[in-house]
Image (cartoon, rainbow, N blue to C red; front, side, top):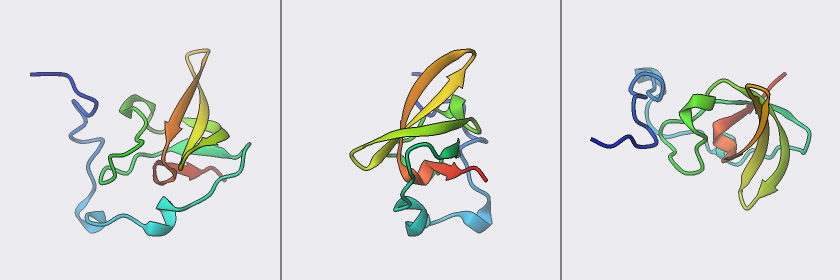
Length: 94
């Protein structure tokens, strides 16, 4: 079988029974400012503009917007990487 985008994510990209179903509209429409510190936390029920599962839990900085998605810059082993993510997949770090 092929190795798709969500391969080997049975546990990491699943929800517990209490949170199954529809996602929060307020989280999907949340706006971030440039320079905000955010954490990557994929919403499994929304497949569009999802960062790769290997970046789950990483923290980064919002550096811009592209359409409805946000550009998030993270450090990956000393290398700067830019991810595109829908607002539902990122959370602000307090």
